[in-house]
Length: 178
Image (cartoon, rainbow, N blue to C red):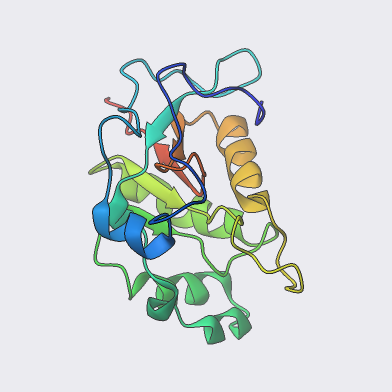
């Protein structure tokens, strides 16, 4: 599933060259030609469904200077989540930075349904594309894969997020109208 191609209208921006840096991208935001709109028909996750994509809003990302890596040492997943959440004023963001594949489900099962009562929710996992090779962290969005598997197994409707360069790192969980 994770290797499913993005929609044909998607064209990632170049990943190198003059003027292509995180700072320039973060400052300039999206252009309609380098990203794609959220799909209209988002289907339930699962093996039989096509992977759906949503454009990750530029304002979703917090710079590394806004994250306190010392929270990694907080053993309680909910306490760690609360510390990370202090730095993000958005009510539609559930930031799983500093969670692991062993702890993220505690956070999701505790707060996701309550958040979905009022709005769609961006579950931020980080893409892992910038992780240093010497780090204890794994590259390539391991947490995102675990989160989407959890969402599938619990019947949530979601779309995988993609930034203007085609990187993941967030999943848009759709609110279910009752």
